[in-house]
Amino acid sequence: MHLAERSAPDEQPNEMARLRARLAADGVPVLDLSDSNPTRHRLTDPGVLEAVSRAVPAAASYEPDPHGPRAARLALAGRYGGAPEDYYLTASTSEAYAWLLQLLCDPGDAVAVPAPGYPLVEPLARLAGVRTVPYAVHHLHPYGWSVDTGQVADLAARPDVRAVVAVSPGNPTGAYLRAEERALMEAACRAGGAALVLDEVFAPFRLDAAPGDTVAAPASASERLCTTFTLDGLSKLVCAPQLKLSWLRVEGPAGELPAVHRALETVADTYLSVSSPVALALSEILDRADASVTATRARLAANLALAHALLDEDGFRVRRCGGGWTVLVDVPRYLPDEQLVLALLAEAHLAVHPGYFYDLPTPGTLALSLLPEPATFEAGCRRLRAAVQALA
Image (cartoon, rainbow, N blue to C red):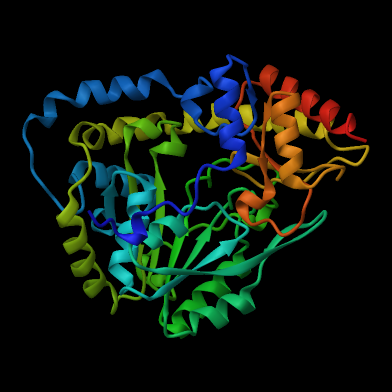
């Protein structure tokens, strides 16, 4: 039987995955500072799940709508602005990306993605028969990250590039788009005829961002310079990835929006993937979102402070983290990165992600999840410091 080449995995499990499997088989506990699943760190508000349970009876009657239930979209418009018709419900941010790849690209077309960045769009694009081309996000200590907007403009001008993806704040960089960067990206997309896809799933989790790093949306969807699709969802907002509900908001020049909506409604109507109970519970869930964000942000801030206290001297350096769930830490380079993370796993039983997982151009950088409970995170940081120093 033939399997499509685009569905085949790129490679066999890497050595880290194989080593973790061997440790698990031997019953060796691993302290995991790479784990970003909030349900494993006691961060999901039980009231969110109770809200879904209460919505189950109302889901007995099914009224399909390509946008998703209107009650849910009214709640989104009330929280984020715009009109209910601007919103589409999806099962996940990944699905929202997949819809947009199908909406905007023919096979062989390309989308521009940030590098470094989280490796999500690339496999989704491959499944859609679409290519990705990177644009650089540069780091300068201690100022943080900046987008190479000149490179974005060059890519957006290419006839094969149909969209530019931006993530604010970035994962794992933690960098929010600055106002001037966003304006330049919108102008570049407008000039090149590309769409802007803006992923804001980590936007509420502000840590040490500068005052101008978060940009409010215009009052009207038609004020955007280019057609813009903004992505968000419950996976991060209320630490509930298992609820499988995200959304995308469509904004842009008024003359372009009718055709965009007709085409996107066709894509959405083909899938109709959102579960009715969670969609019908969305208004109540959003009422709990601010409290959930506050609790999660307190955890993130506490762990970021621990990282600075334990990993910010003697050759270690915690990079500026504007927001999000991940912090980048530069460590002394006694071993190449792959050997380092394998040594940490094999000898210290500590799991971390190397920077090259995210296309970080500089060696000696590790990505740590800020989600673990502080006692666990502190123990992991101490174990990391001791294990690296033992290599000297």
